[in-house]
Image (cartoon, rainbow over all chains, first blue to last red; front, side, top):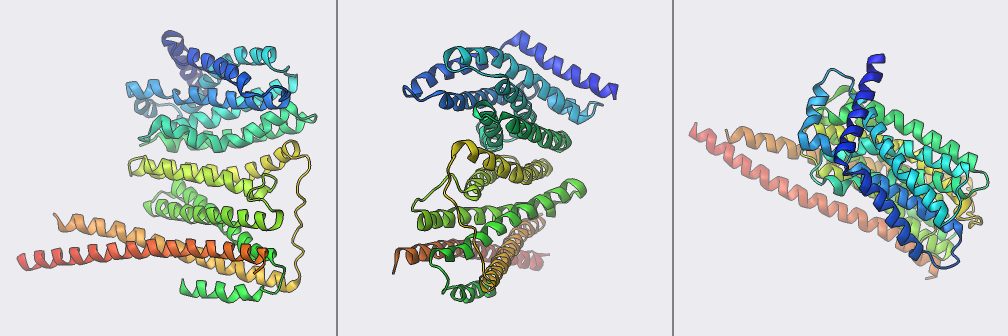
Amino acid sequence: MSGYVADVVALARKDLRLELRARDTLPAMLLFVLSALAVFHFALPVGAGDDAAYGLLWVALVFTALLGLARAWAPERAGGVLDGLVLAPCDRSAIWLGKTIATLGFLVAAEIVALPAFALLFAPLDATAVAGVVLANVGICAVGSLLAAMAASSRARELILPLLFLPLSIPLVVGGVGSSISPEGGKYLAFLGLYDAVFAILSWASFEYVVTE
Amino acid sequence: MAAAIAMIFLVAPEDADQGISQKIFYFHVPIALTAYAGFGLGALKALLLLWKGGERYDLESYTAIHQGTIFGALTLLTGAIWAKASWGVWWTWSSNQLVLFLVLFLFYCAYFMLRFSIEPGARRERISAVYALFGVALIPVSFFAIRLANDFIHPTVFTREGPQMTDTMFAAFCVAWAAILALAYLMYRVELAGKRVDANLRELREVLSQ
Amino acid sequence: MSAGEKYVAAAYGVVFVFVLVWVAIVAAKLARLERETAELAKLAREQHTDG
């Protein structure tokens, strides 16, 4: 078991270190989410109210995550490393978990900038809303890193990932927007937790089938 | 297949004397349930593929999902017409079933996109199977999500009269459902047979050209 | 025909058209399979007489 954890940590750390060296995903995500917020200011009519702004925040978050996920398996693909990793003597689901943690790291880093910016420019975020973002992040990265691996083995690659991901992200957006604007946000947080549990287990169990030849 | 179509047309007049726009119900709901059956069968076969392996499950899963998607599209169309007939609008976001089918339709269209952009082989079979399994997990989760979303998107909804069915209406509904299920199953068998013949022919061609 | 009846007819018509299109696609496919089998049968017969 400790071997499993060590594998996951090593894989996640490899991704984070690669990113620190190359710096090609995180700056793009940051710039994207800030630009999106700037665009939303002009997309919202005057007096549209805070509720509409929360909805747009979730659109921005989902698309920022997509931007990161589209690049998630790029290093492996470029070096042809994935086939080697699959043959390596570690549990294949560890590869998925490592990738999920790494993309989660990128997404959280982007949100550490984006959420205060949103609170400053548009509307305040309370603790329930932030908890909603955290829970949705887990679901986005768990499902997203699996779907990105699927998309990476198709011809269309970047083109197909949003098609696969957006229908699956609808429940997350519902939960996230609900936790931001509903007075009874706890219900939505519980729903997000349920989504995370269901899809994380499913992704964890099925990743092996996606990457083996 | 001819039998099933004949059955549907024999069944249709049976409920002709009940309320006007209600009659769509006899078609719409069985089609929706049949679409679920298609998705469910597709996921079941996908599970069998991952569990036991074997090309035949891939083909069966794909065909079942294909039927599910056809009936899903029909659900959307008949649902839109029903919405127009009873509420005066072509689309209403407050009808949970319709929104769910929109989500599922998008999801399964992506399934076909994914499938057609991967080279045929064991890997495609497994990726399609995993995606099909995600589909059945998405059905209840989305349903729940859409119920929750209605709380904040539509504080007041059209109250949809639950069909209070009399015995004869219920009987007609069951017959219609059986007919549509039979139709879908026959369509599934026909398509499956066609795909198998295709595969056999390809093999035959290879053998002959040696 | 009342508006309600029109919508009912439209709904049933849509289903009918879908099934019709499906049958047409299957018919086209069947025709293609027929052509292919004929071609393969010819090929097989030629090889048989050659061999």
